[in-house]
Length: 245
Image 1 (cartoon, rainbow, N blue to C red):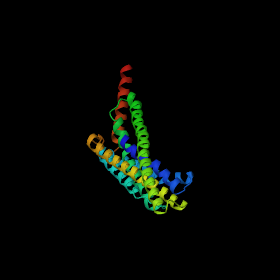
Image 2 (image 1 turned 90 degrees about the vertical axis):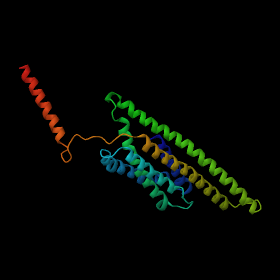
Image 3 (image 1 turned 90 degrees about the horizontal axis):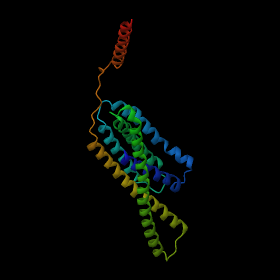
Image 4 (image 1 turned 135 degrees about the horizontal axis):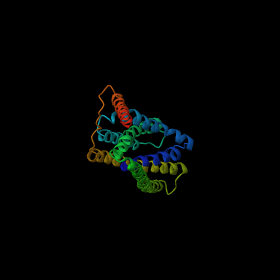
C-alpha cells in the first residue's frame, strides 16, 4: 500500500504543477481535471473489486491494479509542453484511477481480516498511517528527483542556447527552455513512480498469499444462512423461556 501511494501522490503533485504552471489552468479547473480519476477509483472499488474480492485471492486484484496504474504513469512520461489533457492526462488518470481502485479495497480487507473486533480500529489506523507515510515519502522523493532533473536540463540548455546566440537570449527562448525543462523533470520523476508502482505489483503478488474468502452459503441463495441463523436463535430463546417456566 505504501509503495503504491508513493507513486500516486507523486502523480498528484506533478499533475498539479503541469496543469497550473505549464498549461496555466486555474485552481478550480485543475481540481475539475482530476475528477475523472476520482470517478475511476470509485467505479473500480465498488463495481469491480467489491464483486471479485470474494471470488479471487486479493493479490489477483492488487497486482493487476498496480500494473494498470503503472501503465498510466508511464503514459505521463510522454507529456508534451503543449496542452495535452485529452490525449495524455485524461487516459493516464483513468488508468491510474482504475488501478488504484483495484488496490484499495483488497488491501483494506486483507489487512483487517482475522483481526479481533477490539483490534480493528488499531489495524485500520495502521493501514492509514502506512498510506500517509508513503504519500509523504513519495512527495519528497519524487519532487527531489524532478527538481534535480529540471535544474540540470535547464542549466545545460540555457548555456548552450546562450553560446549559440552570442550570449544573448530572448524572453521567448528562455521561457520555452524553462517550460521544457520543468516537463522533463516531470518525465523523470514519473518514470521513477511507474517503477515504484511495478515494485508494488511484485511485492503484492509475492507477499500477499491470502486466499479468497470461503462461502458457507450456497450459491444462488444468499439469504438462506441468515434465515437459518435467525431461526436457530429464535428456537434457542424459546427453549430458554420454556425451561424458566
